[in-house]
Length: 299
Image 1 (cartoon, helix red, strand yellow):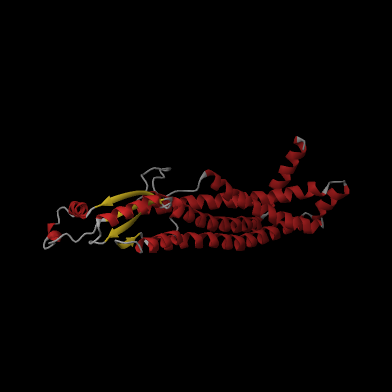
Image 2 (cartoon, helix red, strand yellow; image 1 turned 135 degrees about the horizontal axis):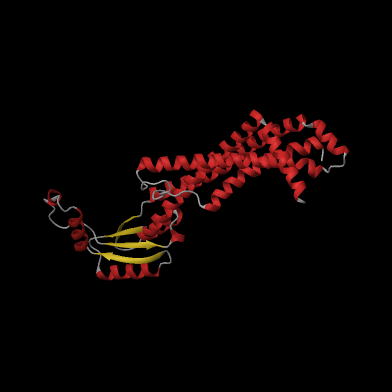
């Protein structure tokens, strides 16, 4: 497209945006609300996944041993653990080491050790689990297999926490798709009606353009660009509000150092995700415009 035609096209788009009035603001607001809610769900999912990733790097399964376990049984259990595909590393803590560690942790609270008598703490194996085996289902199956082995008293791995966080991430992802679909449809409807009003207001001008031989594509383009820019503006407003809300929450929780861009606490969207949020708004606006213009021009 030659520069003069491109300049005229952009000029028509700006005129349409100025003429949009309250309808244009409604379209921008609808897309902004849709993008903001999607952004909130996305941000929650990103931070929950980051928490899960950090937790997985430190995750351990603790296998407590019976007091009457024999040295042969313990060594057989050790070999079994080293051979297990789910286990990345095995560390052993004896009863004496467990008591010494407990004493270090309660230093300054000697009353907790009074009357302790015989060492009540069990020996244990601490297992680092490979990332692919850290799902709730895999851990339950692994723990069940461990509890059946000779010499094992109990297996702890925080099953409830693993299951709850996993379910929460799944719910957020499903909710994101469901809410996004509903709000996206509403935003497209509002944009389509806004653009339809603009098309009707310029019906005579469009008819003149048809008479002088303007193509349907040339007539449609300013309206489609209008919806695109409305969507881009709505996405931008949503992004600013999302970032402001994120910074406020981080500040209230005391997770970030002072400074405008100090993102020491939590995690904001990555650049590609920011671009995706803006593009989502622009696509919603463009889709609404295209739907309206196609119906009007009977393309």
